[in-house]
Image 1 (cartoon, rainbow, N blue to C red):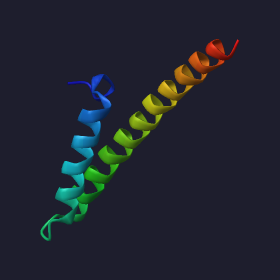
Image 2: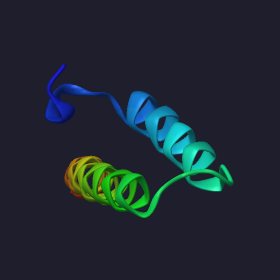
Image 3: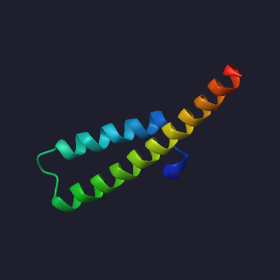
Image 4: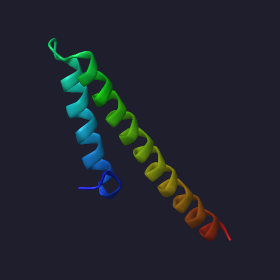
Length: 66
């Protein structure tokens, strides 16, 4: 599945998995870097989706105020 097609809930779930993996004692430096990179991609995606929802809510709020 393409990361951009995931829902916020799926992205948050994946972030939780990544954090669990990073907490393992035997995770290598390379694995840590890969997990960190994937996690940051998910965080950026989540932020983008949240911003989109916030913009839509502002528009709806402005329309109702008129």
